[in-house]
Length: 96
Image (cartoon, rainbow, N blue to C red; front, side, top):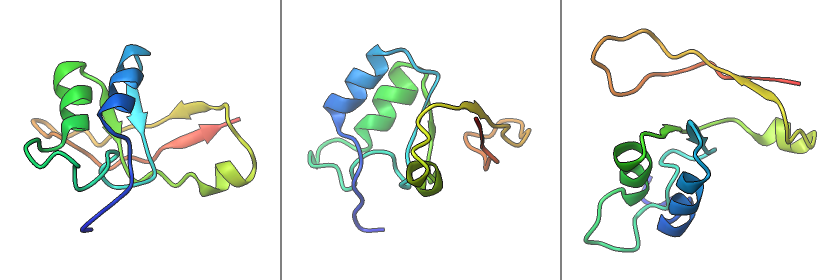
């Protein structure tokens, strides 16, 4: 967990302009880790969550969808009902 590929600030800003409700990835931080700019901590999280209110979903298992070339589907998920929590495990489903 010392390093991980992910999106950078430019990609996060572009994605935010597309007005999504949620951005997900198959890695643990969504963003590149460690951040290339040592002065800023988790800038993608700041852009998505704090500035734009866009939820982040981490550690998605996307290999089966990619292998089957499934690029469009209905996405369904329900987080745990936790009062005052800042995150939750989920059971996402892709329906074709």
